[in-house]
Image (tube, rainbow, N blue to C red; front, side, top):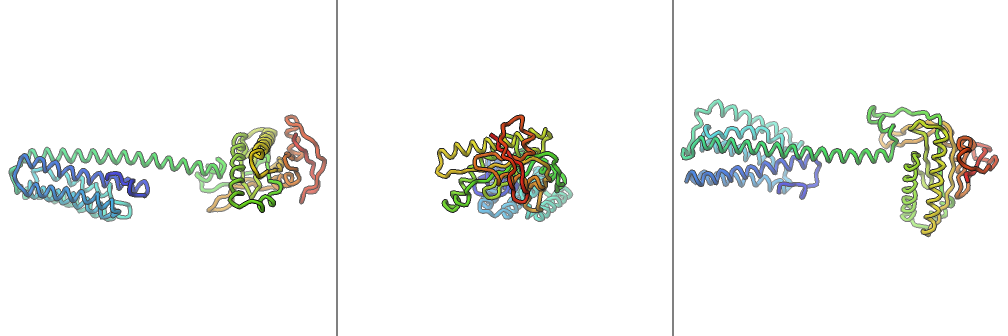
Length: 396
């Protein structure tokens, strides 16, 4: 009954208010139950038994209202039950019973139990309780006991002790719930961070967090990797759309892992094309970036070769790699799109288009960077659309 998450699907903050309301209601029931037991031993006055039983039921109703989803009514009912408890005890046992200390609970409870949408009601009820406390203290000499069978000293011990106990439980519960809320918030924040890192590079995320914007950055020496599948149009026409998406998701998922393993940054996928770059963040030597892209390309081709052995659909892929300068930046205001711009990207795309299935085609610029690390075969000058003749090499 205390835990609302079993019957509520609300925010962390709302659940916290619900739990405190339920805990306070349960403590109100316990408070009146204790007084009923004490009254059984100390007095025969039926009115004290009946009033405590009635108030206990009122506190219990707040739990029921919460379970029904009547949030504001439950909180108002809890405060009214607490308020009536104080007034009734003052009437029956007088000011000397020490029950006036409960007013402090009535003052703070609205801020611990009311949802945000009813915060104005909480202000009003707390102010009323505060004014009533002041009036009670001012006119304490006129607030005398109607039933003198219970010793005022015992009443003070019971009322003040139980009130202190209730304060302790409420504050402890609230601190525990706030810790849980903070832990949940941190967990959700980590999920958001991880998702954001899957979309944007770390330096871009940092800029967006700090200033809400990012300045385009010029990269003097990076290497671009482009891939696409040979015969993709024919494959699309021969399989269902769902199968196609599942196939690409499986392949590109492994490609993403390869990029992470080789420290290459995935930029985007457009249809069957996959674009990645190395050298966007870390300051390393130019040949390091180019070598990483070639290592990634080799792993991608090896993966496809192994995959084709156990799958019906045979995927054949071209790879093109080119090195040079580029500008990176985020385009858009609502749906961020991180991209690279410049002639290097266009050239890398043309290098890929001029390649062959199962082979890594690189430009002369990239070749000069990796010629001491990889064996390459010169292809001579190959015509590339929009670029004219470009010298290209196949990596063995």
